Length: 164
Image (cartoon, rainbow, N blue to C red):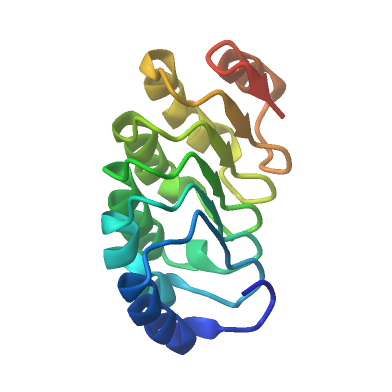
C-alpha cells in the first residue's frame, strides 16, 4: 500500500480489512497522506494484532496533530508483536516526545524505531533519555534530521547499540 494516497478515509476501509485478516507480518503505508484522523481508524488493529512485525508509516502527516501521535503511541505501547516502527518524516514535533517516551517505556518488543527527519529537537530528545536508560528491547534509534545537539545524541547513543 506504499504511496497509494490512501488518505484518512482509506484507512477506515483498510482497518476493517486488517481486523478480519490479521495475517500480515509487514505493513508499509509509506507516503499515503495519513494524518491523526487516519491513524484513529487503525488504532484497534494496532492494539490487537499479534502477527504484525514491521510497520512503516513514513512520509505521512501523523505528527501534525499531537493527538494523532498520542493515540498511535498509546495503541503501540502494549503491542507484543511489532519489532520495527518507521515514523520517518511525519512532522513529529517536540510536543510528541512525551508520547514517544511512553511508547519506549511500555513496549517490550520494539527493537527498531526510525524517527528521522521530524522536528523533535534537542529538548524533545532529552525527554527520551530517562526511558532509554531502562529500556531492554530498543537497540536501534534513528534521529538524524531532528536538530538534536551532538551532546544529547551522544548520551542517547549510550543506551542504544545503534543510533544514527
